[in-house]
Image (tube, rainbow, N blue to C red; front, side):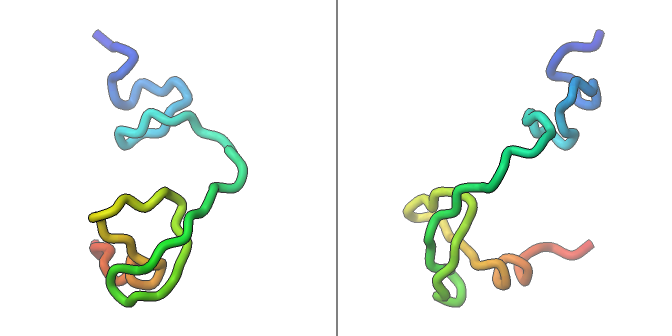
Length: 67
């Protein structure tokens, strides 16, 4: 009973629940933002949404859980 959406079915998609084909898509479009923690101007690879925090690379690394 293997369906298209079963995890680990291969099909050229990444594991971990992301249904995005592998490959090089070229450079990402970057968007200007202000870090919610330190206030530094930075760029992020997504369009910031009002009301949601955005973190610069350094602050994001500090917040990332360590295993």
